[in-house]
Image (cartoon, rainbow, N blue to C red):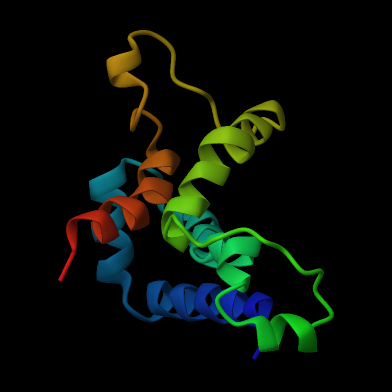
Length: 137
């Protein structure tokens, strides 16, 4: 099962959960302040991105046999950051600005202390990286 299909499956399951269990949508709406219609669009999209860090060469290097089967180029990158942290870095360094340029989100202004999670969508993107950092076993 290719990673891209896994990402789409996760988004589809999330959308079905929202549709079949309205209390979830109500809870997320209250928690985030994002309208329900926007949440029904954003959450599946963000769920599809939840494993985007697994597309990184360093993560793909964890199984070189699969890399060869997929005809992926060889890379010497070592998996030092977890895939969720890689996804967060991609968001912070590239996607957030692109989304703002496209008008999908507005970037927060003001104090740097308030910038980190001031945007509700950023809260959802950061959630995965924050949770895994706090869930060390």
